[in-house]
Length: 261
Image (cartoon, rainbow, N blue to C red):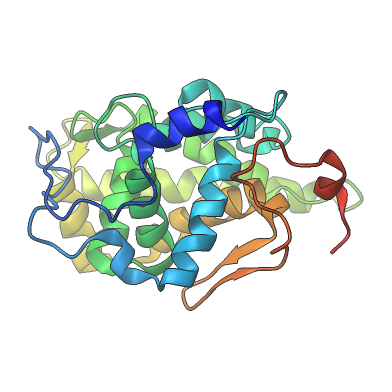
């Protein structure tokens, strides 16, 4: 009866410990080799890892059939169907998480993303941020690559309709100026694109402000998509407020999805 989920989990094999040594194809030097480094799950306790696996199982539930499926681009896109304000950025975000470029986000990649987003150090957060800037993952970010981030930030900052149009105008015009100023400062040779080294130089001089605000947009997106799980991920805790729901079971009772607790 669990054959569909088993086949998918057989590929992902979430029960095993994550491989300790693996390298990503990275001709541009954007992604670091993970060989010899601590596995991503080291940032989380066993209980937290269990809750993170529940989040991943939820993301792999087909939105109409409620059966397990790979977290590919189609599934990832469907997760944003009720979050249209984030639609401009879903393609870029998928590419940023899909480190090996096989068009499926496996649990290792998901865990690396969550670790960098929620508990990453300066280097990890910078790299995640730049992968978001570099929409086609060619090692360079161009001015056009920031369009989706700008559109999403504007949507996130948009004021409620009952507030004045002046307030809306202020929030929507500040965001483009800020990112364009950032790009201009990074692009010191004025060739119309920036690499990770340019980004590092900018951060060393101007601080982590652009990283912080960009990842804040990601946090708002990610937390909104997984809200239904009741699992809250912070820098210090991964807490499950709906422990009675097992998202791994694709035969779950539909009524449990609408339980108030």
